[in-house]
Length: 145
Image 1 (cartoon, rainbow, N blue to C red):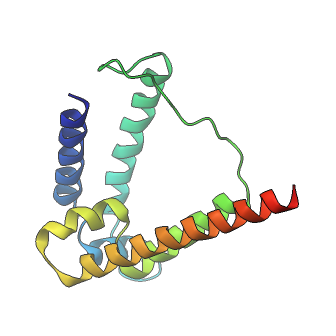
Image 2 (spheres, rainbow, N blue to C red):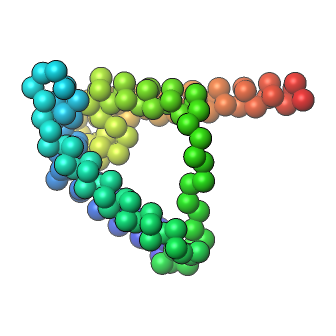
């Protein structure tokens, strides 16, 4: 049942991204172009998503288990550190250059275009490189200890 609910949640999320225009790189870049032909429409999409998220997290904090009975595991980190800031900058730069972030890029794969495929492949390569660097850092930390 968990996998079915995850599939349904993913489908609703993907459809929402398509309907809202988040899968259109031109619209996304227009939103990020504050000095040019700025398109504020995605700001309303983000505002709605943040509002839903705030309500959902407030309700989730009151629960020990999900509706399907799984334990609730909400994020606990609150520190703003170098890794978070650098990751946010890299994410924002990639979003601004390509017009995609991970969710819309995956949803855009359904269109069969080359651009979302190239973005997703580059994203996966970046994730793999991150894992390699994390493992190297862990080995070095163990060697120092």
